[in-house]
Length: 400
Image 1: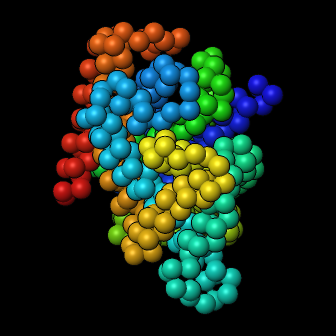
Image 2 (image 1 turned 135 degrees about the vertical axis):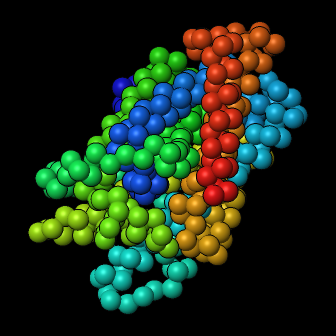
Image 3 (image 1 turned 180 degrees about the vertical axis):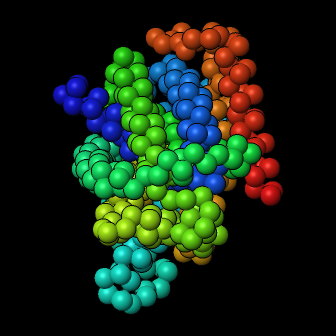
């Protein structure tokens, strides 16, 4: 049972990370080139893995079903609680909105291809919300098992897709480099490793056993890195930076997530991979959708002190999904934009806040912990500085 739960935990971490960022990653990094994108991707993985373990250190201080609101309140007081409330809510609603929008666009594209009819935009997110919203209502264990099935589907489709596409990778495409441009993909890369939000739910699920949690976080975070590296080889190697059916034309698309599918298919002659790409996109987005919405529901339960009985879970589910549904219907093209703005909240919530919480818990409150991240004060300062740099780069990119 212990090994089974650790395996499930690894997949929950990986599934939460691999999602919308997987689809948006080549859209934003394509014009920067392969080598610059890989260097920045590896740096983001190191940064986000470090902040995840800081988050874990803070979580295991309490060994009870708490979320970041309670942790921040205990270590930083009312001000910390208010900041965590505001940022966490904005981040998770932003991500859930992005995933609903992404799923909706893919569903509408699929239905148009099958039936040759154009459905209204409001239809898109509804099927996913009803089916997977019910899974979140049921709790962590059902989400774990549904996520395993989705991860299996994603791995299989990704393997087949990569195998078909790799023969069409061109070294000239991989040789393209534009270091100044690649910084515009920093926001998406940071967000693509934002699995930290599942840590409180995962800690409770694994009984706050540090050795199990460390394995789940490290290997769960390593899987997305491997996926992203292969995905960057495939997409940036197959799609040229400029010209027809290129990243230059993709960057101006209104439905970038759906356009990526047709653009990649156009650059793989002799075989149609559209349906394979659609299935892969569904699996990728849905695994993140489950992890993020589960984290959001647990956060709301902790923040509002709602009991997780049938009535309480129903109310939490409504709070979790109604606001993202509204925004995804009003702004159906919000997918990539929402992820870019989400990076600001990721840097605050998953970068600055864990470092400040750990600083306060370690050095001010002298809290005893079964686990302590290496590096002491210098590491915490470095994490805060990097997080501030991420915010500044993202704001500059949005300004331009």
